[in-house]
Each structure stands twice: as structure tokens, then as C-alpha cells.
Length: 51
Image 1 (cartoon, one colour):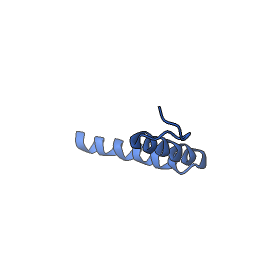
Image 2 (image 1 turned 60 degrees about the vertical axis):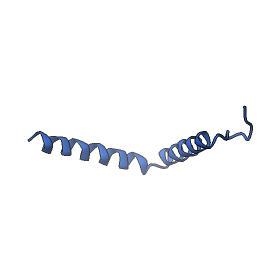
Image 3 (image 1 turned 45 degrees about the horizontal axis):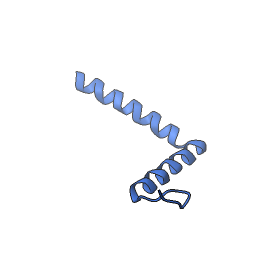
Image 4 (image 1 turned 120 degrees about the horizontal axis):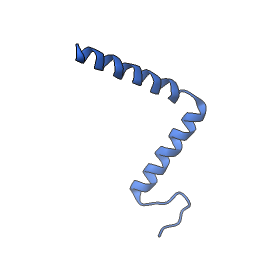
């Protein structure tokens, strides 16, 4: 019983995340966050300067 409720809850959350990700303003935020993360991992800064 608990496993079924957990799956329903996860399904509901996943549906909401997908709906939010489809909005254009959120797509821009997601792309920027990914670019920032990749720049941080590679050691490069978005402005082209390093410490």
C-alpha cells in the first residue's frame, strides 16, 4: 500500500516538473543554470576571466 502511494506521489511531482519545464521563461533559467554549472566544472568563468 505504501509503495503505491509513493509511486503516485512521485508521478505527481514529475508531472508538475515537466509542466514547469515547458514554460519559456523556465527554459531560459534552466539553460542558464546548465551553462553556469558547466563553466564552474570546467574551471572557466562566464566572463572569460579567471582568478
